[in-house]
Picture 1 (cartoon, helix red, strand yellow):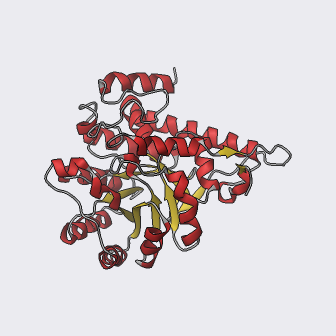
Picture 2 (cartoon, helix red, strand yellow; picture 1 turned 90 degrees about the horizontal axis):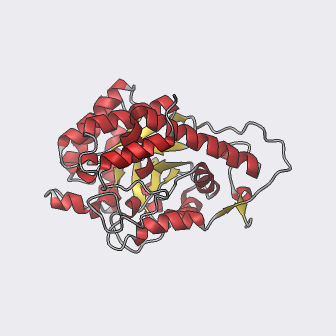
Length: 345
């Protein structure tokens, strides 16, 4: 019998042994403050804000149109995607999920499952060097169809890891600046550091010299977005790191439009945080994003169903997105806009 999402979730709940409750709604309420773990830092309000910000946005039903087969395919940063979606990089999976799966097993599931479903997965960076090496090993098997993330370490380490990404055949790399607030890095004795404008420009130019496009993750407002573009970044990810690095910040859906307004057409804009359904994807696209990233739900899918679980969840999202596009008269993901939102501005 075909695998079902219920089976995937039930298996994940069994394997994670309470480190993730696999709640019916992944909204951060049960796991508040569980870092390490899968929760949001402190009160957990930043995690919850991601979900509630999207819930406060409504789609605009529009039924008098001729949309029959909406186009979900797109291309972002040189990656051809069956839908505007990437799997977010989740690092230290064994550390955060009580050893439910090993690092190699997890990364094999998300990278190959994503590729099977016609999208790509981000791969994480962490203190243990094996984490990034595992992701790049997957990149070699998939002709570079992964997006490796590098944390804002000291320059020498960043340079080395970008060369590793190039050598693995990757088209692009990303630097998750928001990871400077990760408790786990400090606990392991290797914190990451904020970067000034000159340092940021150096990281981007170093990637370009290697033939890599460069994306900066952690943007939560127009100032940082414009600074990243001035530094030459090819894209940004609007993200508060899943609410895991700073308490009491807004949900990403609240700030996305202000970022898009400042840099539209100058760099790709991706966004993560609280995206759970195909309708959520359409909301983010309507606010101006080129694509979204999803983290925690894919961790559940990979733990509970391996690469098949990842592919199944992706297909569920694609079907939901297509339905939402039909119901709002959206012919293509590239044409999503304020017409899909209620009330229209």
